[in-house]
Length: 298
Image 1 (cartoon, rainbow, N blue to C red):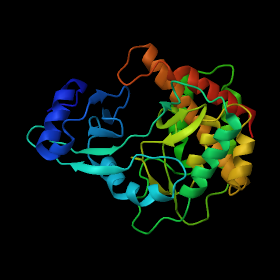
Image 2: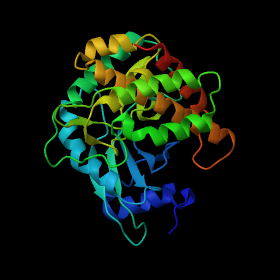
Image 3: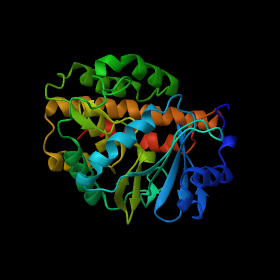
Image 4: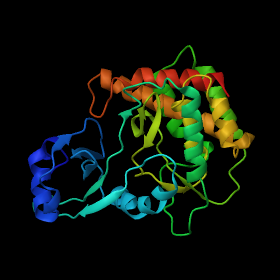
């Protein structure tokens, strides 16, 4: 079996359910647009099936199975929680998981109109998530590092997007983040991938957080970058006031990481405009708006 989207169909999902969880096989199945490493299918009104697709290993999905049931009960916003496990079989030799469905629309398709409420909701969520992780918690291997260890990635994004008019200003934000002191506290739980496609909105404000495949224990600055990447202009200050746990160094690191995330979103949009695999045209304006917020500071 090769890594192609066409191999995962509603019929395949239903057949897998009939084999491993027949009591769920009669529920309506609808494809959910988006997703790369995993593909999502709605299952009835309250569940979803998360199918391993482009991820080369099941590690991220198995991580969600292990830790989301531990974290979800104390988080103030809905998150997907595994309820059934699908194991590799002859029909589909990869992992899949039945999870609770988080209602709302992804932020990359809608906007936040209640900015203050969303800032408070995000700060409350991260305050609850950012607690000391146990010794057996996963450690990040490709993200969550101090900005100085991510300079190659930042340079790549900056050059690829070619922001001639803003490049010096963006570089200054990054250099300040690189110069900021390291995180000196214990490793905290960190979502690790808070961007507009991984949060959902309803009623004009944040209503849930999804995709915990990059969950790790470490420096919370990567999550704090969401103050600029997710929230409307002018809301970063309110977010940090409500969060109330970020010192100056953490904010500097977070702002630099937000700049890098914004450039990544812009590059994905650029790739989409060019018709490249994995590109998302609508992410370009989302990333540019986030970068404008980063440049305005707190």
